[in-house]
Image (cartoon, rainbow, N blue to C red; front, side):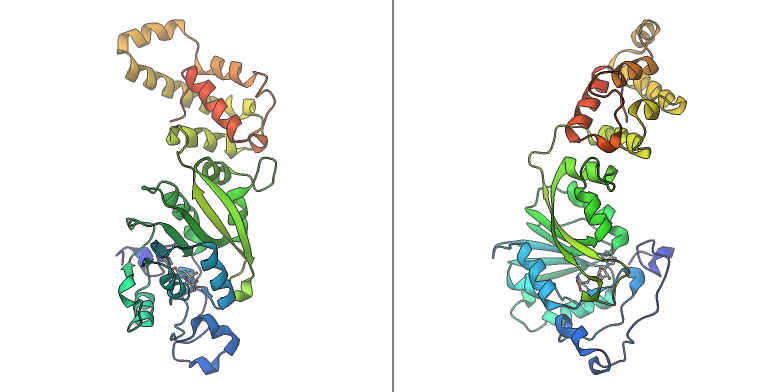
Length: 336
Ligand SMILES: C[S@@+](CC[C@H](N)C(=O)[O-])C[C@H]1O[C@@H](n2cnc3c(N)ncnc32)[C@H](O)[C@@H]1O
């Protein structure tokens, strides 16, 4: 377990540590019995909500999620945040191996105990650690019901994971899930949408209501499938993200008004000079600089082109952004 301050309340930045809804000493009979079906055979450990511990208690939802993963008997599954093992058990029965990464040592013990002495015992490997910092092993399919605070980091960790995996079936807070697949013009269309859709195909699979969890979270959830684009688009991701970050800072403003601000022009001019001096020898670069246009003039020309005149990031699609980046790069403007 990381020995930093956050270790006390967990690896996430969640501030509130909500009171436990169920004492670890309570017997299962002291709770609403319908709450325990997916957790049958477990100790009903008190959930630590600062670690996002909202356990799936509805076996029908567990079954549906595992079915959406469409596992093959030869698959290695990566499960992030197995908790007490509600999904781990059916995942084990349909795959060759499950590698689970779990932060809470109580959960590590619980999930191991749950499969101990069963036919699946040797197929489960549990890594105790923070999934954001742990190197992912090889896997075919990822299945995860993770704390919402770490969703974004995990999505980007998965998007850059190699070798490519078949798919990830993941539960997220509803709004986050909808952002992943939001289209141009929709209110939730944002930097997360374009960055994710550049690298992957996202399908909304199902809605999961709050009452399917113990304890219920404050928000509704959704399950999505993420499939990496193979081959990945031929684009320098830091450069791409630099441009997308700038444009989505004020997604409803025109490209012109976002890009032609003093700090942005200054930054792009600096990038341009750095890039030039990397490409040429310094003296040549300076000589050419005197004759060439500055970043401001180049931006002005590009944003006035027919394709982008008056356009706003909120309405542009992936092809528009790719073409815009290519146009800027061609003219020596770089965003990273
Ligand atoms: C929402 S619960 C899901 C538990 C179980 N998969 C289920 O559906 O019932 C999230 C799990 O992720 C674990 N967790 C929280 N932060 C984590 C992190 N940074 N790395 C790995 N596991 C984490 C929690 O301890 C908890 O067991």
